[in-house]
Each structure stands twice: as structure tokens, then as C-alpha cells.
Length: 228
Image (cartoon, rainbow, N blue to C red):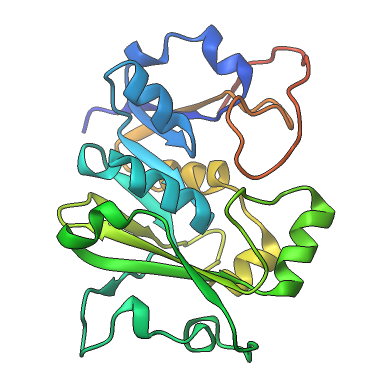
């Protein structure tokens, strides 16, 4: 088998120093790299996304209808499965904990409902929201006691991530260990028999070009090249 190089691309400013659209090998993009793909009419081999709100954003962009995605904890509910659909769902069923009544619902991408093959779901309790505010990591549409639904368009090229190294299989374990998208991409690349060398670029600490999860601002960082 001919071996190839694997590239793992983060969202830090240093990624723009590379002509990654012409990199030779298997390319793993993380989170918001899908925006670069749209801007440059280009697809990475895999887009890796962990957080559900980022997954919702990527799905709503329709990137998965064009490019392959690897999502952590991806278990969409088949649309109208056994007569169950999003409007009927109590948050406590999915979140597996007791939640107060009075949740409202936010549909992330109602334009895809008619062609959906399934849907995804998460919720923020009042406690969840207050914690996010304290960390400075709220999303503009988040609110206390709100549930969020994302419709998965038919034909979406999304696979669920499984782990042999990180040993993380549930949201609860991820919240405890917090492996980021780059770590998942690295594991997937390490276990890919077609790859013998891995280059990691664009992982400037706390300096993502795109951010929907924090109010951190980009800072200058020393440039370093990493490889294994």
C-alpha cells in the first residue's frame, strides 16, 4: 500500500500561512474550516466536529451534502421514528435528567425539515446557561430552559466518531475529559492505514479565526511546525 501524509488543520491564524488547498495527502479539517472550504470551492477529506452547537452550524450550512464529516456522539433520531418527532419530545428524555417544565424550542434550520432524514437535539437548563455566561462561552440564540433541534437533510455525509485511544463514547465522558476536535482528528489519522506521517497546523492557542463558543480574541503567537 502506498502511504500518504495526513494533515490536521485547526482554525488558528497560522493556517493561512499554508496553501492547504493544495496539500498532498489526507486532510482533516476541524470545526469552522468548512467556511474556508466554501470560500475557496474546496473540500477537506474529513471535517471533524465535536460540540453539538458546532455540528448544528455545519449541518445548517449544507456542507455535509458536499463533504464527508466525522461527528462525535452522532446519533440522529430517524424522522417520525415510531411516531416520535421533535415537537413531541420532552427534554428530560434525551438529557437523561430531571428538568423543569416550561422549556421553549429553537429550530436551528427549519428550512431543512421537509427533506430531513433525522434530527438532533440538545438543551440548556437555567444552570447550563448561567455557567456558560460565567465562562463567556454563550451562543447568541441560547437561553435558559431552551431546547434546540437540528434537522439532518437527506443524503448528509456524516459518520459518527468512535474511539480506540481516547476511550470516549458519551457526552458525559466528553464533558469530563474534553478532547477537542483536533484530538479526534489525530486519533482517526493515526488509525488510518493509508497514513504514515502527520502534520498538524493552525492550532494557535486561544486564537481561532472563527469562534461561536467564546469571546476570546486572537493574539500573536510564535510560529512553529509540528510533525510526527
